[in-house]
Structure formats: C-alpha cells, structure tokens
Length: 128
Image 1: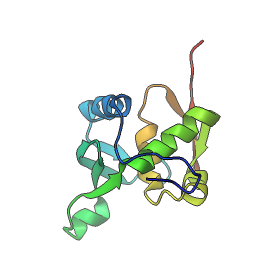
Image 2 (image 1 turned 135 degrees about the vertical axis):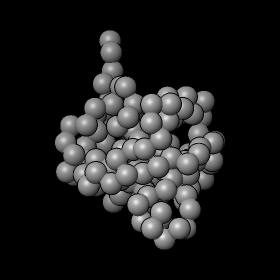
Image 3 (image 1 turned 90 degrees about the vertical axis):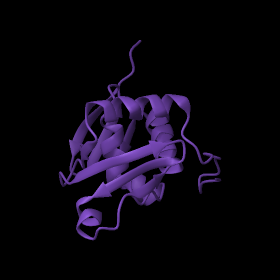
Image 4 (image 1 turned 90 degrees about the horizontal axis):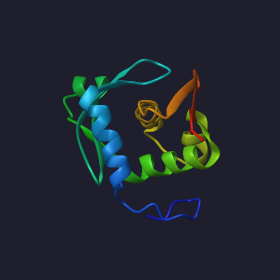
C-alpha cells in the first residue's frame, strides 16, 4: 500500500512487529486506550493486522474488527524516525483511523513511554 506520505508500507507486519505484539498479548490481551481508558481486546493477529474488539463492538455483537498492518507500520515508522508520536499527528497527519488503539499498542512496547495521555504523546527510548 502506498501511503499518502509516498512510502510503501506494504500490507504485512514484519517479524520484529509480530514479536513485539506477541510479547504484548502474552502479558494481556486487553489494552486500554491512553486518553479514555477504554478496553480493547485483541482477538487475534497475524501479518495482515490485529483483530480488535472494543466495548462498542462487543455491545453491537459485531465481532472483532481488523486494524490493518499499515496503520501500525506507519505509526511505528514515524515514532522511530522522530522519537515521538502524538495521537493527533497519527489521526490528522497520517490518517490512521484506529489511532487510539495504535497508540495504546505501541505504548505497551518496552522501549516506548507515554509522555502524556491526553492527548496521547509517545516517546521512544533508545539506549546508546
């Protein structure tokens, strides 16, 4: 998939991202959004993306919805490149419509810290 920033993010998660998500799910399959503390249940994941149920989808019994791999990839790329990533930037600049979940997922990684939660701002910690 060619994103609006001109980069090709493909349609699949790479091995590193799959390992990171596997580690997150091993701890818990429930992730709360950073700003509103809403639960997101990870039903499954693979190279195509992460299937997530929200309180809303559970109430509607619509089942898990896929957060496409490109949304996670573009967010991770921006965070790694700039060192920080905000929920607003993710939503408005990168057009990631599942931005609250993506921020919450990235915040679970050991090398990512939440600088503020409303609006969410993440920072990647790199060791020398």
